[in-house]
Image (cartoon, helix red, strand yellow):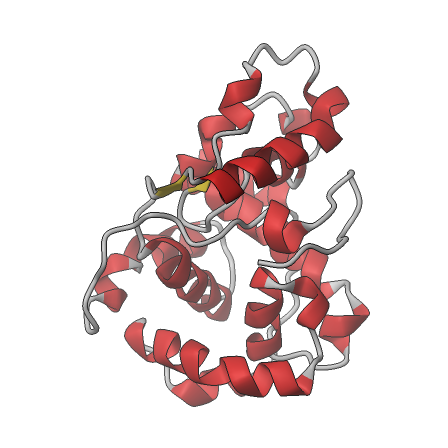
Length: 223
């Protein structure tokens, strides 16, 4: 995935550096997607997110991890990206007591996130959560909400406010609003949508507002 600049809190290159390349999850044949990502939808509902947002998170999780919360990508490129993310956020995590290696192994979890930047989505109150929190479904949902909210603030999203554009930006933020890229990527995302029980036309819909912050989602899921 490509690099870019997004949101605040020293989160640079989130296309590559928050959400890494696809995790090493076991291959799942078509038709199993709905069941595989049912827990994603379940936790999204528990957090009080609109149903459509549960569908979107399920779509992302299907592509990134095939619904496996323990999916892990620790190849060289992912480890490098994770190390760069940690280097930019080093001061944020000073004193938290976790070894650097815990932040720099690569990416993982439902949404293929890199620990340092994923934790930054949750705000300072949660900065010292274990980097392994990317593998904890309840925390991962909150991290993903934070990332989605950040993307929706981009003008590249706002010029084409569709699920398709948001999904494309999840992996490559600077391609947001690029009609040629969206047309090229659409067939793959349409197949992912069908795999998780959504019609291909769902991608053309407009996401409802996501007013709940990542920290609020985490609080709800931990209540």
